[in-house]
Length: 301
Image (cartoon, rainbow, N blue to C red; front, side, top):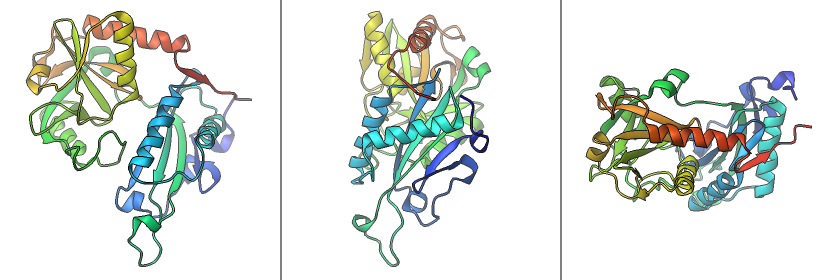
């Protein structure tokens, strides 16, 4: 199926209607914009099928409930809208986002309990958080001194737009010659970066932070792949110094899968090239996706 001409750049669902992505708008007074009072989730489409759609829908529903919001439609309704956005845009590989905002307050009202929550969605061509060269030779990561917002303040397991600390971390990385950043907590344990989880490999063990992070769906996939391959994996606090000394480091995201890191704070990781275990997991991840692992095929008819 090819895209309908109006939707060639992407499609969105706004106020009960499908519109070209360039025409998608939310009211400027929606608390999703003015207060970051919003949650969202992103599911990928690869080779004409959603990857782990049910996991993303479940996490989105949990995030909505965690913010004491209510979706104005059912889970099946959300799935149908996401599918239609992809169909209209004619995308075989796509980045598909679902959003729930607090909504627009009535004049003089500041009580979130009295607001009608709003749902939006859109589909764009697949987005990579690391370009082809970076995925080939590995990313240059900086462990930023910027501390991640503590979980006691903003629950990181609820996907959110509170990126002020992450953006500060990115600029810290740029200033230090890096390409992206991972933030630490008050105990100098690494947490997460802008849109990704981090993993380190030492002594044949794969390690990833247990706390202070979004429980990423690709992160979940890596944990499953390690179990399938008999690789020991620790989901536990991960000191920044352990990442600096690791034999391999990689990051994971819906927008790119498993991506190698070859320098940390300007120093080479291992031999300064993508490591064998990272490569093995990455190859297996894409092979299984090509085979239909956790796939929900889209009917484009």
